Image 1 (cartoon, rainbow, N blue to C red):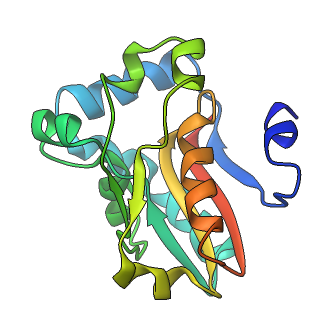
Image 2 (cartoon, helix red, strand yellow; image 1 turned 180 degrees about the vertical axis):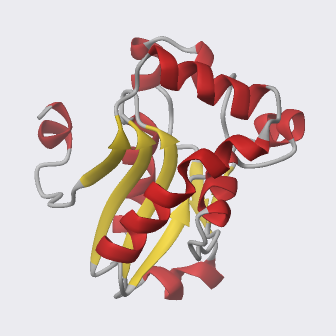
Length: 167
């Protein structure tokens, strides 16, 4: 409801497979911060089933990491989740700006963060007129997803929705 006040004309939906709780937090920490990419295999059945059932004729776009996060991790956890589940995706967003890691920010700091994403001229044609779903691993405040939604909507998709493994 809070996001509806900021984006009153946005009609999309967010889909999450699991609730974000202490157990989920520990799994994600193991996955993201220790580089245990095999953790993604724990979720491939549910993630794959979701996309096969709900997202036909939809272009899946993973949320990109900042250069700092990618450099320290060496992989994008959302891309690994999608690959593990056999979900095709297109990387059209770039994360050009982010000071610090989202996981180290409190809610107020996350909500004040500036638009970090950009879309190249080449990728505008991929978005325009198509059904889009933005994918991320965790939805906490929604700030990251809504930054991406805002940018994607400015390029005239048919629809734009979002997905996360945990919320």
